Amino acid sequence: MDVLASLPAFVLAVLLISASPGPAMALIFRRAALRGWGGAVPTVLGLELGLYVWALFAGAGFATLVAASEVAYLVLRVVGAAVLLYLGLKALRTAWRERRSGGAGEPAAEVPVTGRRWWGSFAEGVVVQLANPKAAVFMIAFYPAFVPADGPVFTTTALLGLLQITLETGLYLALAAGVARAGAWFRRPRIRARVEAISGTVLVGLGLRVATTAR
Image (tube, rainbow, N blue to C red; front, side):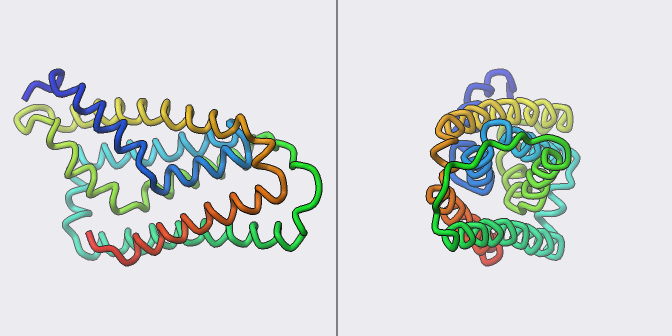
């Protein structure tokens, strides 16, 4: 297999997969809407670091072991579901508080994301991606189509993973920038409550799907 010849197909597949709804998209939209573009950056970087770790695991064969082991897959599935449910319920709780306050007042100011808040958002993105059992299955199902079995598997996988996270980072940052342009509108109390309610519901739904869906 010629890796260079397959790159256009790889890029197209990555763009289509990245644009599909999922936990990453829900988190990025929520961060960009409520905290602005700067608030979404650490989340995007954390998600992509987590994805790259899975790519390296796939190249080293660890992702295959996780996907093949019933116990490891179950543990990862439970952890992943718990993380998504926690984030979803947290957003729903915030929406409930916003609605109790009556939704009055001026739009909240954009809070600079620095220090602990930045690292907290970054870590959240990493954990969400690493605790996603579907990421392991995706890597071992998707990458072999572009990695020659008789070549340097780990190196090729690492390079393709780097290309994927570069493309995804650009796509997700563009999405965050577009959402952030309407940041003042999203941060109006009534709209903020709806954003929290919708994103919380989506995250809870994704968490339940991860918990109940077999591989």
